Image (cartoon, rainbow, N blue to C red; front, side):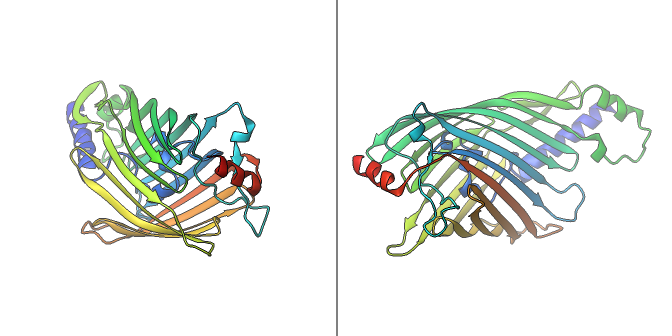
Length: 339
C-alpha cells in the first residue's frame, strides 16, 4: 500500500512536470527579473524589497497559488552610491522609478522566498544570492550571479481527501515523513544599460530526485532555464516611454512558456501593460508609484489556450518598497557627464 501511494504521488508530480512548469510562473516578470535571475539584483542604486501573490482558478478548491518575497542591494561603502535617482517632477513626495545604475563595478547581495501550493502539494524555497557587476563599456554592465538555498517539497495532510478517514496505512506514510528538504543552486548572467537589460539564468541546477516516505521515486526536480529582455524607449518631448519585453521559460519534459509584451510608462510613475503567452493567455496589467517609496502592480491573465480551466482568469498583485537617500537631478546630470 505504501509503495502504491508513493507511486501515485510520483505520478502526480510527473504530471505536474509535464503539463506545467515546476517553477512558479509570474506575469509581472518584467517588474522583478530577480525572481528568476540572481544576476539581476542591484541593477538600480536602491535597496529593493518586493512582495507578490498569484492566484489561479478562483473559486476552485486546491487551485494553484504562489507567493514570493525578494530583497537585494548593492554592497557599498560610499553612501552616495545608494540613492533614488530622481523625484517625480510634479510631486516631490513621490519617487520616480530610477533607471539602472552603470559605470562602476559593484557587489550585490540578496535573498528570496517562494511558496507554491497546488492541491495538497506545497513547495517552499529559500535562497540567498551574490552577484558581481562588471563595467563592460562606458555605458553598459555585465553581471554574474549565483544563488543557493533549500527547498522543501511535501504534502499538506489537511488538503488530502480520503475515502476512509481511518486509513492507518496513510497515517503510517505521514509518520515516515511526507516532506523532502533539498539543497539547490541557481545561476545567471545579465547584460544591461540604463534603459535595458537582457539576461539568461537557470534554477534547480542539481536535478534532485523526489523522495517521499524514505522511498525514491522516478520523478525529479528538473533544471529550468530563462531567457528574457526588455528595453525602455523614451518618447521625445513627452513624459511617455515604451518598454517592449519578452521571456522564455523552459524545462526538460515540459512545454516552453513564451511571453512577449510591452509596457507604456508615464512620468516614470505609472504604467500599463499588455502581454501574450504563446498558446496560453493574454495578460493585462497596471501599476503606479505611491506613498513616497512604494510601488504597486496588478495584472490578470485571460486564458485562450486549448487547456480548459474552471476559471479563465488568473490574478497577480505585487507590492514593492524602494529605500535610498535623495539625490538631485543636477547631481545625476553631473554623474552622466563624467561617464
